[in-house]
Image (cartoon, rainbow, N blue to C red; front, side, top):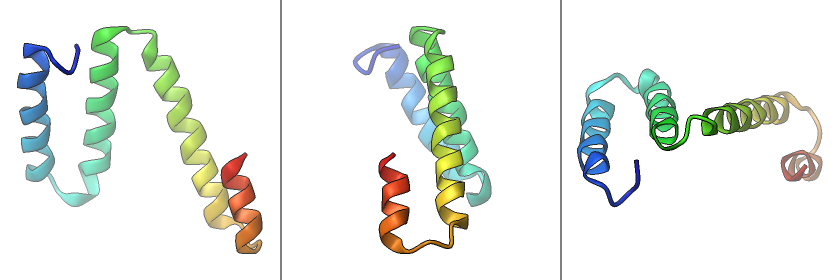
Length: 80
């Protein structure tokens, strides 16, 4: 699915409509699911790429959040 396709013109309003209909606690899960579907509809190999990217980003965020180090070291973790 490409951004300038008819499929995307149908997909995008549905995703936005459901996003505003569901509770706030579930919105990030909905967007993650919609993102996976969007990238997999173009090339299923990208599901692995986005899964790895999601895991690394989530793990790094948790690590920085629990770190008791000073702000400069946290920025270093973020950079790495």
